[in-house]
Amino acid sequence: MARGNGIVDSAIHPLIRPAIFWSTALVSPPKPLPTDPIAEAHRQWTAHGWGGVADGMAAVTSLMRAQQILLARVDEILRPLDLTFARYELLMLLLFSRRGSLPLSRIGSLLQVHPTSVTSAVDRLEARGQVRRQPHPTDRRAILAEITDDGRATALAATEKLNESVFADPGLPENGVRELVDLLTDLRSRAGDF
Image (cartoon, rainbow, N blue to C red; front, side):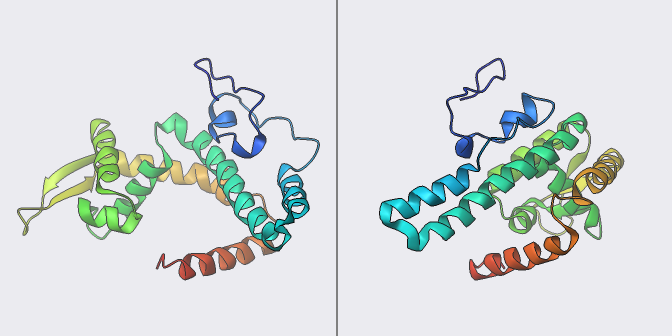
């Protein structure tokens, strides 16, 4: 568990260490482990009679660990801009919208998050002057979130840094990136994500 001083208890198994372990406590990732804990878990699954699902367990666990690794890389870029990935996504959604504004309910739908999460993100961005709430021009019940000039500049600066430091090299060979996107798109489609 993370302690108040940012140190992580070394007894925590690497499979369940939160991404915050090296995204906030350390400047660089921890020293690599001598063996792959997911490969060891696969071996244990098989040894305990669950060999038929060991590959599935390894795939799911690998995806979850990869998400932690990538989120830590993204957080390292966004933190100096006082952004989380959720707030960055919201700014980019507004930046890409035709008018620079969207109803809060539409934001939640497009980002696939709970309305409370949208409200919280808009509150934080509004406090920083990057978004402002506006009444909807034709629907008195709806509120729009509108990106400000500062929000636009922040979104573009963050995107430039992410493009350079993360998206240009997500950690896979170039041909593997397209293959991974295709596999994950299929997984998301089968799950009813779109």
